[in-house]
Image (cartoon, rainbow, N blue to C red):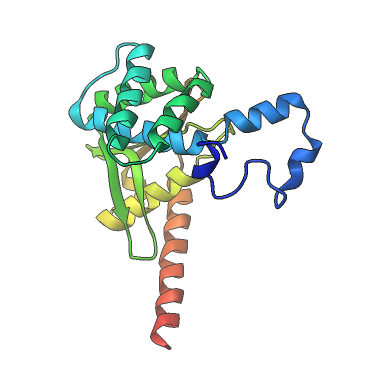
Length: 218
């Protein structure tokens, strides 16, 4: 068994998920290249967060690739496993557009003096950790870095905005809200209307109430 497969719970081309039977050669290669993209995305997020917290702006793409590789090497050295080595080998399969996306996200987050990996919480049932967030002079900015290729939707960031308003006892119509999804070398910028945030806030309060009453019956 290869060192790559020892770190996977299931075979990449498993009998339990036989969709690969219909793959052509390109599909097979893409599946292999993307097999550890989520794990590498976690490492990229950790490295990016560290740069934001230290206000280390990124000057070029090679700096990012070298920085992430160093992060992985230092994180897993001495763990007694080859997981770090496997991740480093699989970095060669990452799409090149990831690096300019990371550069844009890190530098913008630093430019807006945002907090990285900040927990936003309404209750123990509903909370999350934002990639980057700040609120200054009634202007709320929420940025999210996506390392996957499938186009992301802004719903996650809308929930963060609703949680922020609940946590800080702030009304959405008293804020200027801007969300950004950084993906595929670009940033998708939206300004959600306050009524959308109010609606999500109401649903969060409702779900917390429903589950709270259910817990109380036990």
